[in-house]
Image (cartoon, rainbow, N blue to C red; front, side):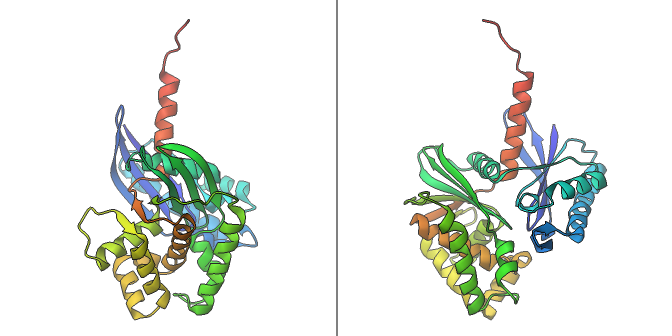
Length: 311
């Protein structure tokens, strides 16, 4: 069976098509639209232009899926529609324009689904660590020990929202860096409670993590397939990005041009979490919230078709 999952994020909208078997799945193809919905939020509401951008993105994906004769399509939204005051209005308009039913998942759901997806790729059974997903307008964290969840939360700060609120130029200068650090501390440290304790190993998903890994592969000539970044490597990458000169711009434009605005804010959030956890390294998973959402769908379908047995 072929199943399409569409994720309406605050920075990007992503379509992933899967081939689903009895006990496994594989990715057939991915498609991305950098909609930047967090940039359309005005006084807490997603503007009419932002709503139009969201449903136009879905209509583009729908054309692709119809051309492939794919009818199994699930659509969900994260902080892009969750952290606004006109969620119901935006969802109704998007549903009416596209014919898709959009499910808005909570911050806790997003964290747990991201962790569930990463489990399909990274062995966490013997680890005592933390899962991190830095999105456009929120950051999800799950604490786990030997594969079992201990705590989860969602912080209302992400790479695009941080850029929008703190940066005036394409790359942040010293003043913008100070503003971003203040916001990151306010949004994370002040609301985390007792969550942060030493976790040597982090499992990370999302565009920021993938970009940092790509930078590390390039800067340190790491072998293809390598998926770990040390704290020292992350600090060096952040130092290079914070300088904001030609070398930083060239690195971003060569490897992650779509993230020219958001990679520095995202890297700052990642570095801050590394320090709070006193982490030594992160492993970047190729699977995340979309795969977790798919796994939940598969699990629910199986439970519906499992015959009940009498006692």
